[in-house]
Length: 272
Ligand SMILES: [Zn+2]
Image (cartoon, rainbow, N blue to C red; front, side):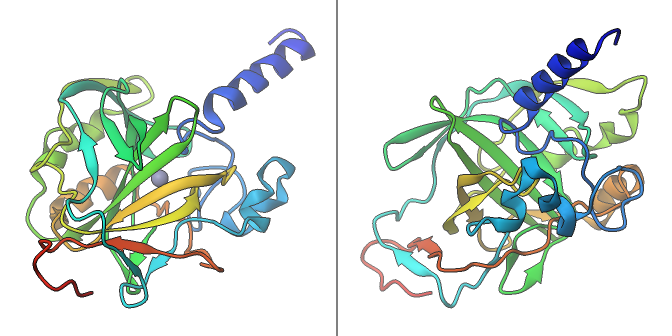
């Protein structure tokens, strides 16, 4: 870049395009034990003046979901209100070493009359959210944005078990993502049931991006149960390409409430 102004403008554009929208595109930070990315580890993210929220925020993500203390939400018996469609996507590894599939924003998630559009999904290994203290080998984040810019993310933990057929539709392309081949076009991405299980239960809380700048105001829905599985071989495929963890440690709940939908039929007695 030939002059300083050009550099500043380019930097601002980069921040504008990656800082808030995706939640996983911000470069310049790293995770513990990850020598492949430069930048501070999670305990130092808040030292960057642009990322102060990572240190001082009171509603940060991820959290441990304690299913014994969550509050039941009795008016949401049918689970998450999503309408997704098969679409094409772009599969790549972003500058934070997070694998991501960018979509066209066609899928919808409705929360209390507000509609959020599915922008992308990406993966953390191991999981960022823990459930009753249990950490899973993999977690997928479906990132949605409303027309006014608010974010709603569905966090889906994958338990060890059967091979995941949804992941299998693009997972074997992971080794093909190289510097000379930075992205692959996926012609058919379908996150609908039964490819991705969003039922029966989820936990809802107010949190943040789990990557810098750790912006708050994100509505989280964390899928409970172990309906989504991943095989050891699929985790090995991931680790061969990305051998370092990319999970932010659990953040304090502070005075937040974690809610849970009631997923039994209306005539049955709800219980946790
Ligand atoms: Zn994420």
